[in-house]
Length: 70
Image (cartoon, rainbow, N blue to C red):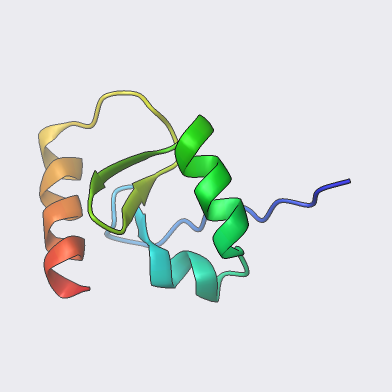
């Protein structure tokens, strides 16, 4: 049985999180690889969204800011 952590809801990040934030929240690298391959998207390197749907302009801007800060 696999126990999955919740995707963190970090204020101001428009539903996105960086890989370091997810690791800090208890995700394993293996779980992140699996989620990326099956149900998440990576709008910028090391920035993840917990869905494969479209991102609005504000979310894309937040992804760019998170990427620039990582």
